[in-house]
Length: 420
Image (cartoon, rainbow, N blue to C red; front, side, top):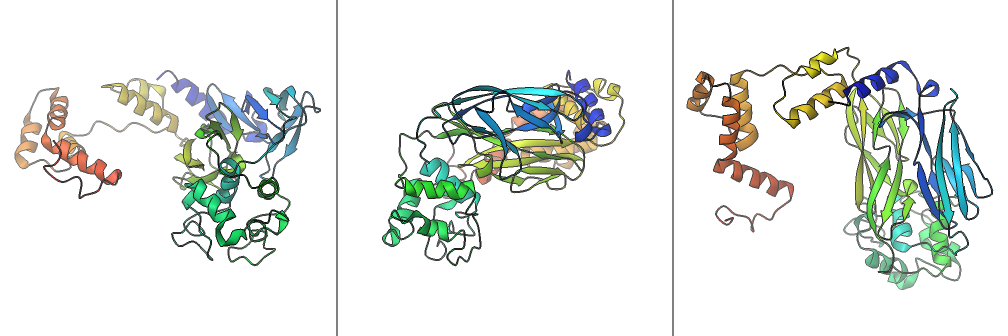
């Protein structure tokens, strides 16, 4: 409960100020980064900050580099400021808000002099995935489209490489004249394409595909670093309806490197009654409540949580004085405080016994069980009932089948009586 005061003060700040007039502490995300090679890029977000929470993107911010000869600040294809390397070195990035608040971040450039080659697994396939080419509604369908079949969401890089470079006598790429490759002419509609225009010939994604072909169309390699996890920034935001927040996605590789993959990530919202997200990763807060945005890249997913508190005035004593049986109650109360929702009163015995039976063993209590519980005067009877239900065989059976459904366990393998 220690962070309740921080949450409440931030909620009040969000309620009275727009992002253009924040006037409080601001931060640059990410605060530190490394650009590896001449193609390294880093999108930059400037957000309001109080404690560990972020309160929306700040508009009208001026971002500068301490040494433009090392890093310049440009605008990316998705409208975000992006750091572009010019030579090796380290710079300080400074952001200044319209209210005069400043924030800094450090960015290092290394290996700028090395020749850059795009990876089929880590760059070419993500470009195709971002454009929807290998989804179930397109070439990722089980039968493919137009004679061209890719693995769903790029799960099989070697197979996709073979399909793109060897199948149909290799007509999908032209090593001697890369610009005539079907993987470039189809999505740009230089050649008729039923899927419509998916790529702009002036875009970085087009350049990734074109340069990969020009440099020899290198196949997937076991020596390439693999994506171990992805990260989304900011991971948690506290906003109000009408505000928007853009997201940045970072991929962490097995060799310790980190790459900005925002333009290749795909985004979906889990609850659009609270917040929606567009294909560029801009979250729009629609109503009060809590929603999440799923960012997907290279078969890895991560969640960004968006909270929009309700406009209720609730005394802190309501939460601090609320009964707490264990740490779960403390977590629930902190969440309710964040949302400005009053805790529900203690349920009656009649309701509790019905709910606890359904939640633990999946069936209603008998009349005898209900009457016995209601008539019991022991103040610890609820805890005793929970312990009793958790020890029943019905609890094991019910949750074994529940998780079997979730994990898609084969019914021919898991049958009653086979689990010992």
